[in-house]
Image (tube, rainbow, N blue to C red; front, side, top):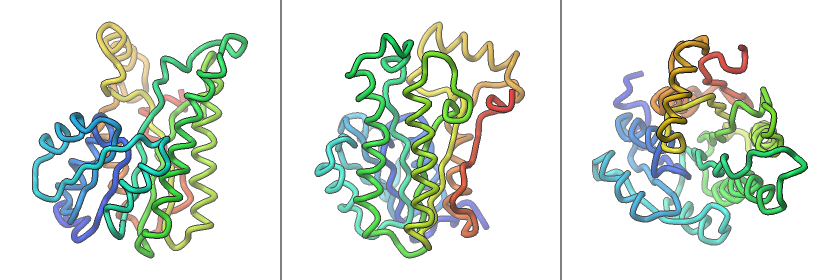
Length: 243
């Protein structure tokens, strides 16, 4: 299958599409011939910039916070019939990392917002999914290898994988999969922190490099186009979990 026709005549909706992995998936979906790519996120300005970066008349945007159920439902259903729903939005992890005894109720609720938003999105999209379309739920490596001080994030990411597995049965023949990244060079990493991660990845990670949004985009395209893959968790982490 040629990449420029892999998604021909299909509609791809990406929640969290204004930057990072979501933007990379939007760009690749457009290149793969999608009839329509809809980017959803909280900031209209960031969405407009993302659409301009992708280019093409097939890119639409809709501003909505994924934890606002009504607004997110309106944004998703404005796309019409959907072939692929991709959920890449993330919680601000730095605000959710702490020892369990120090985590506040607000920090816990903020972490759970990711699961809440993914639930709202799946519920909104389910009635308008094309019969053999797909959903992709982006989790995180902490679901499989929980580090210290990330207990609530690890629990949320593991729940997202389980939600995807359960919906693969419930929504069949719509295919539902989880996509689990490791360390990826996105805007959540800045300055010295980013450089520290890059140096560590290049010396310690089995892949010997920092993951790129394009790595996850190609994995997402695989999940969208392989009609025999469902109920799976595709780990794209440079060997982080196996380390």
